[in-house]
Amino acid sequence: MQPTDDQSAGLLARWRAIPLYLRILAGATLGLVAGVLLGAEAAPLAMPAKLVLRVLGALAPPLILLAIMQALMRAHLGGQQAWRLVTLLLTNTLVAIGVGLFVANLVQPGALTTTDPPSPPATKASGAVDPLAQLFDAIPKSIAGPFSDEGTVMGVIFIAVAFGVALRGVRHHEVRTVEDLVHVALTSLITILHWIIDVVPLAVFGIVASIVGANGFHDFVALGGFMLAVLVGLLLQTCYYMMRVRLQTWVRPLGLIKDVRDALVMAFSTGSSTVTMPLTYEVLRKNVGLREQSASMGALVGSNFNNDGTALYEAMSALFVAQLLGMHLTLGQQFTVVLTSVIASVGAAGIPEAGLVTMTMVFKAVALPTDYIAMLLTVDWLLDRCRTAINVMGDVTVSCLLDGKTRDLGDRG
Ligand code: ASP
Image (cartoon, rainbow, N blue to C red; front, side):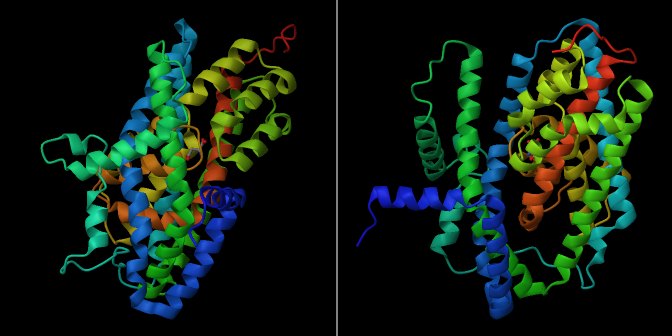
């Protein structure tokens, strides 16, 4: 008997009601078992992960473009404060990337594996025509690709179907200004991104199975080391924030953490700095007692551009995968990682997993195989929450720095 529409919708709703991290953990555990049982035979199970990455790669450029356009369009910038904001954002992000690269160079989590450099989590050897592989090839690598000279009709159809369905949700949205247009485009991209996130647990299952099947547990030792290294990096970044707050503002660091903890907890639990934004603003005004202008510049305007935790994570991931492959990134290449991480973090919308999408850009810039991002999917559910909290802490810090060394006792929201 075919399931009815209602039944499938109910099933999907029930699947979505399980927290994502539990779905991912279940995928990873089942993948581990399948990898042990199937050994090298588990290689084709990496297919869903490849699919997720392919679509993420295609979504990254327009997502970055629209997120930056929208942020710039909506920002109320003016005069001196704007320059100060830009300098603060840039220095904090560069420090974050510096911290990330420093820790990754020091700890070398990618070198923790005891085997030879692993082969990429491959799907299938080339050879006979495989219908699944053909379908996979039809998925466009970039949104503009199908419209270029080498584009295929299948690619155009994929895009038409994806956007057709995604736009249904906003079809009654009035588009009167250019801002509305950008908003609708960004909303539909985010809808597609959510579909991809639904497939992530399956992708994790497949990638874990194929890696364990091919290389045993060695890569996961390295991945554990990477996780710890990222957490150390994020902690160091927090120390840097606290030091700046202590030296350059009237706010006291320990009191500050206590005052903004609701926003930090919300960032950790939602994995979205954008969703947390109104609360960040509120606690800065009500609990910390910052001036209206500093709180809104840092938490509302700055937040759109400021993702230090994401920048740190992207730079560390690139270095980690390079180490895992035994590839040496020259100083020039590490500089490219810095540059692209800045752009990628600015372009990462403040939503869950956005950093993973824009990471494809960083990897491509230094010719690292994006296949390895699939491996990071297994730990991203936790690291995303941690870096989101740091992203919010970055907004909090910038707001305090803008407020300066003297407190305005008359202006409390
Ligand atoms: N989830 C992060 C945020 O909302 C973005 C990211 O994925 O790095 O700030």
